[in-house]
View 1: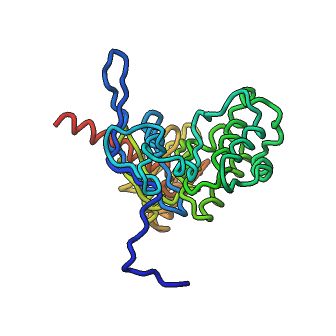
View 2: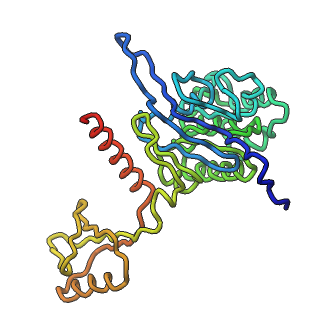
View 3: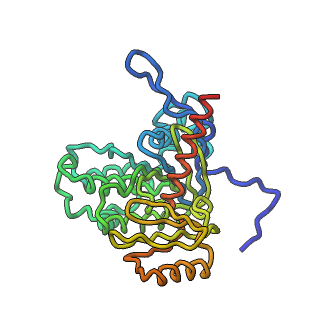
Length: 322
């Protein structure tokens, strides 16, 4: 392996979005601002995930990054080119899976996939993709008659068939059964290993936690946080304890501990030592009380996302009052 040349400039990111803004004309002629300041970057050989609630601006951000929508402001670079003014040669290097599919309803899956493959100089074998994604099961059924999950599999095959350098995947595992989701995960991981840049959105935070190298949290058209999954979760922070007791039982707690109630359970944050656990179990033993469930776990990406979104909403509200 050759050492990298420090005098050689670093390659630009596969996707670079900075201070992106976008608005649409709403009823009555008013402008509705969807993106206020979205920034993210995606590197080759990595999975970059945009997280946000419905309406946060994820799909609009992807559409601008792909060149399907013209931004109002900010900077967008795709493979170091402006995607809005890009030639067809750039689009041939990019694979796109849209949330609504964007598939021709009258076409049959394999015929359409074969047609798309014929548009590329070096496509992936259609038979391989069809086998991996199970398209042969419904190959003779028009796309309009397919289930949502089946359409998702066809859309992913279409995005992959051109062997793109950059993959944009909008909710790639939505509506899929567990077996199909596993196949999608494997394909995404294989594309990352091939050095592709993968940008995806998902509302399934377990999927994001499993797949992502970098996560950007978007809230109300703004990027409010980013980092690796470990950085956002805070793996250095101590775990929390969730414990439940039988109905009618009021548990004893050692002095100085005040767990909060969440539904029918008690949650104690920052359980940072075996000694603390021993104090808890000793208090329950003295009261002859046995929990019916007990779970010790670190914060999940979902916990981090909800906290970040709540903090961003609070900051936005305070800023509007200032």
